[in-house]
Length: 206
Length: 267
Image (cartoon, rainbow over all chains, first blue to last red; front, side, top):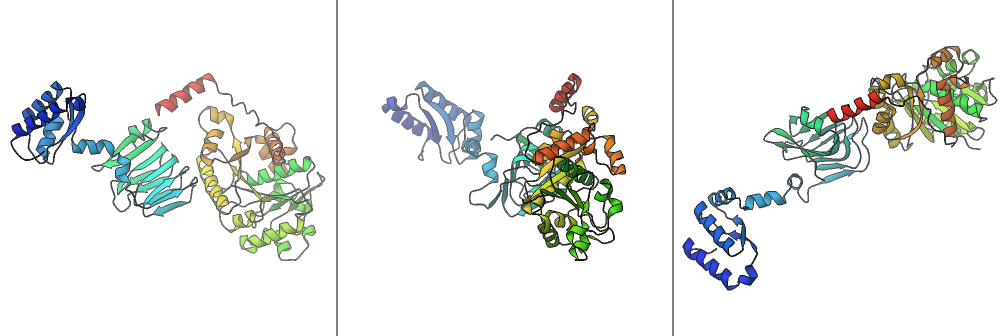
């Protein structure tokens, strides 16, 4: 939206919509308001006026954090939340172009790898086998050995496995201590990540 | 003919490699196969004792390798069977007296004349083990249903794969159905789930094995022994027969089933 008085801009927008009402009927729109600071009253009024025209305002994009905060208290999506929806933790942990190692067999006791990047195992990791890497670790099988992801301190690294029963598990420099959550998820695909130095266990949504 | 060269190994000691070698050899001989078994555990020989041939040793494996005798002179014939021979290990030497290429050379001398050459491997993953698997075209891993034996078996299976001698086949020895029912022993499925290789047989724990080992009379010759039956079945499977696994009375009672469900859900 251009510069100027908010009331004028709002009226201009509504006029434009009314002139092409057939096109906008039942539309869902996202509004980019630039760096304009908008309060709850202004945003909710616009939302209601749009609703009168059978248009659903679903998102407000703004570089103003105050406007974004207002929008999200009104239940509208914002740039931040949209990004969150699109980007799963996996893509946050793995960036395109980063090196990865794929191992197509079960890694047995006494063997293992150390790798500068991510590691994907298509097989099990048995007790006594070890993987250490600077990135994330994905085990398409049962993780029963020793794993250390994010070796150089990369705490955004994740560890995923179809079944998790590790001898030892570390992300960055934090050692995992078994808790009840893991027991619940023992026979299910699990994704483990770090959030503010605490381990977070999730169902690995494959 | 060209012999099938089968090495029997385990990683961990005391799981029953020698017992398995002796009994499978005997069972194969009973099935009319021409069999040589070689004890490659230089310095800690046992196979001669288990087979009851200890007092007939004149020459041994190291004598053959160092050319103090011809191979035929070191082969002790077991008189109870038509075609079963033992090449004993040297007791007064160590593993370094033999190299992997020595083992291949020894087997090459007799490979045309026999159906099976069975090699009893020493425990461990070092020189002795490397010697034992060098000539093999098939490897059998023996394990017990306990965590440490299975861990070592996993390690050795990995090495066998790396040496391109795999895939190994598995014998689970000394399985005790009573302990499994009580939940105090890994069951065969737990072991197979981890090791993920083909199962050649399950041998139940059987007191008669201890007695027969002391008497030098392998259980495979005893009609009524459950372990003997298991070894005879393993021999038949090596010959390509499809033999169902022994019924070890593992049918689960209703209480065990309920507690198993409970444990799975509750842990």
